[in-house]
Length: 121
Picture: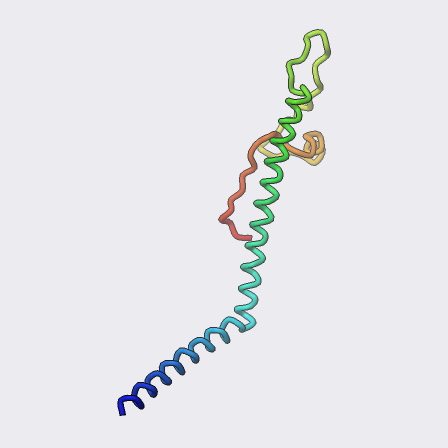
C-alpha cells in the first residue's frame, strides 16, 4: 500500500513539474516574447558594436600619437623654419557648421570619447 502511495505522489509531482516546464516554454515562444527577445539582442549587439568602435577610435588616436612622436611630427620646430599651419575654428555655443567640421579634419582632438553604456536606443 505504501509503495502505491509513493509512486502516485512521484507521478503527480513529475506531472506538475512537466506541466510548468511546458507552460514556461510556450510563453517564451509567443510572438510578443520572441519580439522582445529579438529587440533585447539587437540593443545588446548595438552596445557591443559601439563599444568596439570607441575602443578602435581610442587605440587609433593613441597609435597615431605614437607614430607622430616616432616620426618627429610633434617635435619642437626650428625657429628658422616656418611654423606648421594649423586651422583654428571658432566654435560658438558648442555648435559648428558643416564647413567648419570639414576644416577640423576627419578625427577630432586626441581625447577619450565618452559614451553612456546604460542608455537604451
